[in-house]
Figure 1 (spheres, helix red, strand yellow):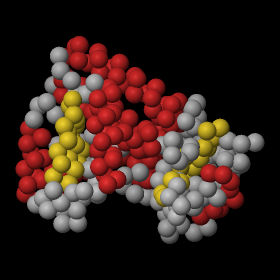
Figure 2 (tube, rainbow, N blue to C red):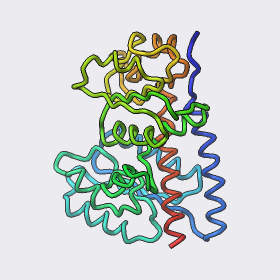
Figure 3 (cartoon, helix red, strand yellow):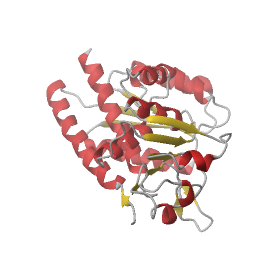
Figure 4 (cartoon, helix red, strand yellow):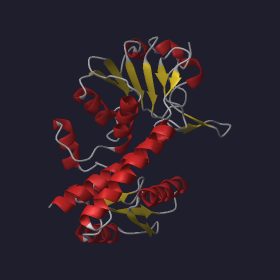
Amino acid sequence: MAAKIIDGKAISVSYRAEISEDTAKFKEKYGFAPGLAVVIVGEDPASKVYVRNKKLGCEQVGFNSAVYELPENTTKDELNALIDKLNADKSVHGILVQLPLPKHLDSEEVIARISPEKDVDAFHESNVGRIMIGNYSFLPCTPAGVMVLLEKSGIDISGKECVVIGRSNIVGKPMAMLLLQANGTVTVCHSRTKDLAEVTRRADILVVAIGKADFVTADMVKPGAVVIDVGMNRRADGKLTGDVDFESVSEVASYITPVPGGVGPMTITMLLKNTLVAAENFAKK
């Protein structure tokens, strides 16, 4: 029996409609709109697409947005000066610096420069620590999006065996924390994990975020498991694919996210949610 498709596009549209309604109420109550500033350095084509989609998302839900496009040779001091200016700007409630940055700029230093209250990517070490103890304002957008997909699909995490493949700071580690906070029993796998398939076959919920095209195959998946594919890769023929071999795994799993159209649409949606939360926190002060 083929798996049910978790339609990230549809869930994202519905969730954005909720954000739009909440934004309208916010503007009526406080008299101003949430504001997001996006900074992009250089000419990376994929980054430009992401930034354009973020701006469109802001327009959809009624936010103010500003995009700061800086040249490839922007210095550390110049970038820091812009971040300091945005930190001090009361009309800006969320700041996002698009990654990757050019090699001469240190991403960790840049992230640390952003005010934690405006760090809507939730990459600042202060926000990472708050996620660890379960007392947070923002969640990293992709893991947060996965949690919404599971919730909206009626999938209960409590008591389930959850396996995350990948231990990045952006997806793998925070994903494990969120599943743990939802009372899942969590195992994190990575490049040094022995007998990987033996571990993944235990999973009731399998989240894959390693950046290897079609890496997870049907023999690695427990029959009836929920499979969440966070990967986004391009095959030699130019077609997009995830980290999961969708064709074979969809015959084994009970639920599965497609690529594209699964986790991807939720990432910017959760960025919008974080920006609204940041604006609400500012307004309450």
